[in-house]
Image 1 (tube, each protein chain N blue to C red):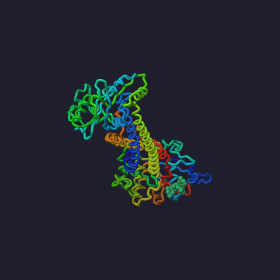
Image 2 (image 1 turned 60 degrees about the horizontal axis):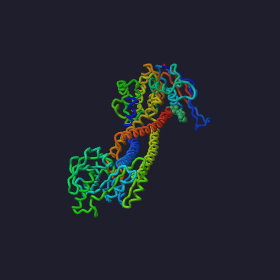
Image 3 (image 1 turned 135 degrees about the vertical axis):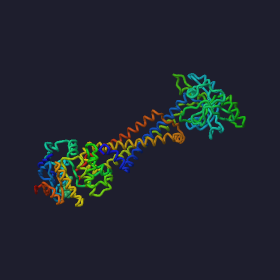
Image 4 (image 1 turned 90 degrees about the horizontal axis):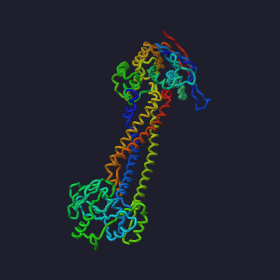
Length: 224
Length: 398
Ligand SMILES: Nc1ncnc2c1ncn2[C@@H]1O[C@H](COP(=O)(O)OP(=O)(O)OP(=O)(O)O)[C@@H](O)[C@H]1O
Ligand SMILES: [Mg+2]
């Protein structure tokens, strides 16, 4: 699935005053293609999370459009967008985002929309080194374990688009490599993958590299 | 695991939250259900007393206590007796507009062996009675013979057993339905039997009548007025022409009771309303605050593709389920309490108290259940609105 975002503008009005509008994403155009890994680097506060939230249908921009093939996402209603996200988009949020009263496995399966694909969940749990933790409640896990669980959850439906916001933020080198490999593999399988990260080692897995600076996106590198 | 299983999962895993909310709902349920049953029982008691009395006018000896005694007897079951000259009957019979007329004899047993307390004995006239027989016949069809008695529902003796009163054996031939009034603790027999009991008592040296013979006295007269005659006129007629007796309208005698009952009922419904207003506010606020605290959870659900609509349904479902749990618990607790302590409540009140039957109780259960679940739904609805408006992108950055 190809994503074509055009002229994205996100801004906030400070204290509700129109003249104090702060723009966070400034006329961003980006095209994400299947089978490729796009990496977005950028300083803290530059608008990376905001941008991928817009791309994933989680934040309606003030201006611009996000097209998934020929579907104009923000022209659809919430039911459609939600269902679409559930089926096609794997989103790994930056912060902690698991339900603390569910086990690892339940968290993963909760996102599973084609029934209870327990085997697929086990496969991801195994792959992400969580096998001995699958019956743990997410409140009993470390930050890195939670992150890996969120990754497994994002991948459970074999999404055609994956957004990963700092997926390796709290992981050691070993697990970082595993996660990047996994996302790389997703792209090889045909998914469009977008990784937001500070981790320079992501370069090695990227097809396209962007840099975000003060709400403006710049293409930095196209590899291979 | 799927989103449909989440409401129950949340309810059972967040135990403190569930218990807190359930508690509020239990209080709501208990106040409404308990209050309704209580008020209904009081009304039932008064109704059954009015029905049992079945006469328009009651004539009593004209001394200060007899009316109070009769009220205590009827309302609280405090045994009492008083007598007046039988000649009054001739005067009463000749009054224009009197349809039926019947006499009763009251006596208090010394300690009957059935009971640790004294027992009220009510003797009625087999031939003329129209106030007691209609409901006696619900439990006993025959004509009472000498030494046969019928007992109120609260006496701990059974049909076929015997009861000793003033040294004589009496056969229990019937046991009455519960009325919730003082009539439940009385023993019923014929006037003639009561007369022989009075004689038996006097033989034993227990002085009941000062000088008259039992044949010359009666305790009270019940009058049924013909249709078309004014009851109050007849009452004042009797009172004007007879200095030894006092006639009271049966309904007037009940007025003070029904006034008291009205006061109690409105006080209770006032408290129930107060409890509801406060508990409803607390419940809605609690739900709302809790929902606000769950923003992260809702954002996480949005990320995996749960629509706003489904998020709202999730919050509503939890509220409704908790509403059901709370009302069911509340109804069970209240029902168990009201039904096991009804005798105690009735006796503490000194008012007729008769629990509603199955149909009325079912009705109150339904009304309570629906009201409580509805309130749960409303608080769920308000909270759902909050959940639905969660700003996912913002929470994900936090
Ligand atoms: N709802 C909002 N109200 C006000 N300011 C906001 C809002 N959302 C985002 N911002 C601002 O927009 C900027 C970009 O935020 P964003 O989370 O996209 O940054 P980021 O590039 O992901 O940063 P980091 O690397 O630290 O995660 C920040 O300066 C943030 O304060
Ligand atoms: Mg960010």
